[in-house]
Length: 411
Image (cartoon, rainbow, N blue to C red):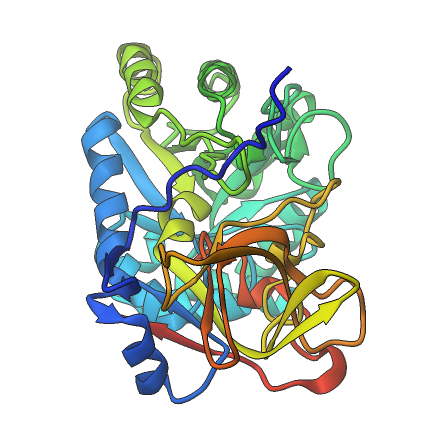
């Protein structure tokens, strides 16, 4: 058996010149000067546009692409994305406000998530945003609020399917879930929608996220289409939207391989004739967040001190889990694994060493890289954590220990 440790998939999305990462065509050292402080997140607008273009190339032309802005709700990123995609999916009134500030038409914005308040629902109804209803109770509240406002709400039913997305890091469907309406209860709900006069758009069926296995995604797409066709027979009107979710993964950890997007696209093309025949008025939507933005972003922190403890080298930085919880291993990982990271101003430097990169917090959980081989770094050097464009800053406990928040820039 080989003792060779698996390596990260190549992180070649950014150019390297003179051993320095280039983000948006700017050397990392210059970008740090321009930003004015570390730590910071940087997102490359060209990389985002290239990823959306790749999706357009590999997926059927009939597929509508929606951005799930929970992955990265930075207003500048969302504005940029609004020019590239066909719709935006939000999960709070705060996200909805950002989406409504873009040129995206309100009817192309959808609002999902359990526990929506009456205030949030009223804002969505008044704006003309599509409400993805998560329960029968929410349906009744939407109807009542629509009557009060004198507006016919645009609605879709979020369905909790009786299957899950296999090999998914987060399973959002199948079994008992707080998300959506159990599939077997949806027909009765559709009958009620017809009686109370809501403006029915269609279905939102999201079964899982962060999946790198083509066969699992293919099975999910096939089952989701069949479920949508079956439920459409009970609908109060034609299905105009069938959101079949997303779940496309990106490689984070050693041993991960990039998703074979072309294979996913070929299977979807095979399904298109049936979809057109059975749901002739429906737009088929794939809703992606992580896959669109994760690889376009990096998190950058500065080495404050080199410290040796009983033979182990620690690079103590001004960043950490309070800014990037996912990279610390405390955002859903069962067994902690390193995100890809480099000394961003010394990429490929001839002298390397095995180090642990830690932050300034008083907890052993504040760990950005554990015994990872990197170029030799000194105080003042910049650590860059790849795959940081999604679920970074806004998924992190920024108030923990009251350290300053990082800056975000789109370049």
